[in-house]
Image (tube, rainbow, N blue to C red):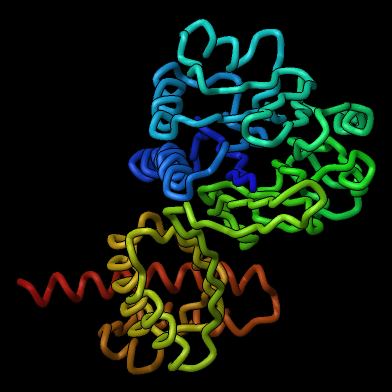
Length: 377
């Protein structure tokens, strides 16, 4: 029996520039923490090796401190770490890997394939057939040589590659690097460990993407895992199990307001937000002034609880009720302006509707804030 962990797409050094600095720092740190979790799982499950199928780093220009932190995170597992390069950290003549070598931080138990080769681990019962990327994009299948590579009889043949299985994945796969869907059969592989697709995905019984161990985008394709793989002997079907490694949960919410209960439903969801949530919220429909005030208060509270919460209210129209306007005491000219803006919101011209909604939201919000100040005086 051979047992190993299959992981990929660590993307160490990734920059989260769309987030404020304090949020970006936590998200980047979680990627290092995921490696520490992988090392712990490797020990807990007594694996023979950890296979890393490319994109260990997110870019070729990674800070020295980040490189050191990554290798430090691997220290807890003393067994073999078998790595290949991906499209983000391809084995160029000058790369993040040459920098790591100059720093002297590559551990002795790291088996790094910077070119296509077979690495045999006879005492562990398997051979790793490695197809690293030596440039960001290739247009030929780097796993094709597997078909003719010989390994010691009796050893499991484990393929390790980074790219897109042709005809299987969506068009927005991270890289163009093609991989034949028949590679397992043609190369007589017992398992093909793949990277590049950031979600956990089974291609066939012997071909898997592990996905990234820490979610890094708003895409619900099962990120946040490593795969625990058991293979009893050559030719025997692998037993593959997901092990959770992710810390943060990235979610996109879309919520439309038609009736008053729609707001209550959203407020209930916001109240349940927890610190590991990274949320992107899009709201649409219509809301009155009292509802808007309740909404903004709830968003502020949830934002303070979540790791990150951003919202888009551009498609949410503020429609003050007669009672709202009465409560604002907007008499005379202001009352006439508000009435005119409300009328414009019903016009067929979408541009006029949008401008009127924005102006009405701004005006009524200012009036509401003025009222609060006056009440405090």
